[in-house]
Image (cartoon, rainbow, N blue to C red):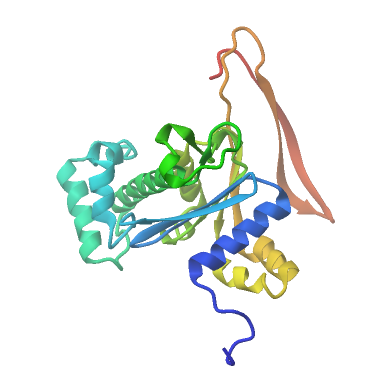
Length: 275
């Protein structure tokens, strides 16, 4: 078009393009999620292979009732840290569906909404796993009719996940960043070491388009202004008796003092019967 200098791209395509380039630049396995009101987009780059899925009817407003239907009340209630009657949760969810632009009015509403978000994220990732598959074993040329269910396996290996980037109102605009961090950890159940971050103001679609014009500029803005690091999830999976599984060394930066960061260092051995 004459009115623009770069190609017009659909939002999911632009987000996926940026995530694919980030994964390639850092040589990592990456999962990205954009949870909206009606749908949830999941992006992944594993072993250099890019996949994107759209989970229709898994959203936080227009489709929130379907999340309740698919996840069931019991799975949502496990993320609510107090006893609550199912009618309260169901009424809360139905009210959100018929008034999709409203936001939680009190702490209970917020906790219920974030509990639903955990299940929406979990279900969307499960659907993505079922789509992002490859043939087992050695390479074989087959037609679609010759491929059996047992011959395929998912590319998504949570134990090899390096980075998760979250986007969407319930994640990017949670009252506290730690809440977005915990929602994604609970939904994805990472293993070993995984970094988590959120898109600060839904800038990734714009940066995806910018990367087609000036990739370095897109990366600079992405890391400095768009990406908000939440933390690193350390989730060991091991069994040991009377032995040190591993040790953790943490450095906490406290303040900036005459041109230098001043803080303290702490080492913590994590030992017997860690699982």
